[in-house]
Length: 162
Image (cartoon, rainbow, N blue to C red):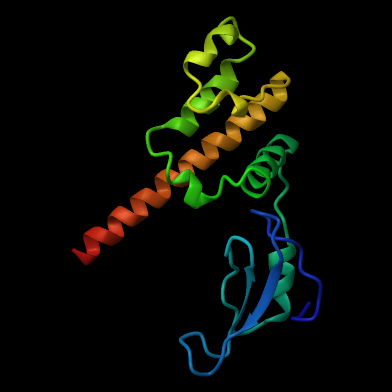
């Protein structure tokens, strides 16, 4: 494969993948990489066997259906609901984890009392069936973990610059 070959969408957000050749006046001069135009996920920089770069990008580890559904739900939350990383960063008091817990407990004996714990307006409370609720919960937990990782990275960067 080469720069002209078809690239699969980003495995993280479904965005369009683009091939980049680095100019001679940059740190990675002569190298090539593939980057998602949606979330910025990128391949390694390849200097030698560039024919392998596209096939590496296009190769996907086998995901269980459940894991694929969780990643697809997270992508839907971002694209359809607007729950971008920037939006999620505003929920710094555990709201996403709390919402995930509500979806997890929905079909238990506590299901009728969850309104007390739901962290947002009730218009956002959209339970369906047990599996779908668990997929939503897992995607919300993934969003919360990503938020925590971004917060930690920002704190480390600020400490470095202090």
